[in-house]
Amino acid sequence: MTEQAPAAPEAQAEAPAEAPGQPAPAVEYTDFAVPEGMEMDAEVLANFKGIAKELGIPQEAAQKLIDLQASLETKRSAAAEQAQAAQKQQWADQIKADPELGGANFDKTVETAVKAVEKYGTPELRTLLNETGLGNNPLMVKFCHAIGKALSEDGLVMGGTQSAREMSIVDAFK
Image (cartoon, rainbow, N blue to C red):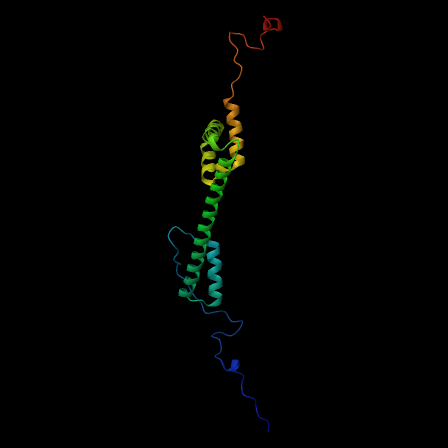
């Protein structure tokens, strides 16, 4: 007579609630709570609910995962805002340190650059430059400053009623 070996410990563990290949028990989720001001993408939420349902995750556990994701997104957003603010400051510092445009010339540089934006820009452009910080970008400041200088340069003003084109060469030398 042969003895049968005792069952392995993992075989003695409780069987899963559902057999492999069987659908998980139907779980219906109520709306998940998110921090005020934060919105969840509907498509991502639908995918999450599908995966959570497939895994049989109860509402409370699914909410904990949503809370974790919201926390991660809040931290990521704060880090991005901080990086953008640091970039704006770095650009402003570069212009202030520029030997031609910065130092004692900084206020005049800004005034001249603003003149170009006021003349040729739109309110939407001003908003874009301010909100994104691109108005501090050294390349943008140099560009707008050059345009502003061109606007400020004196031009030749001819007196009288004849324009330069109407004048003959003989009249020009009188």
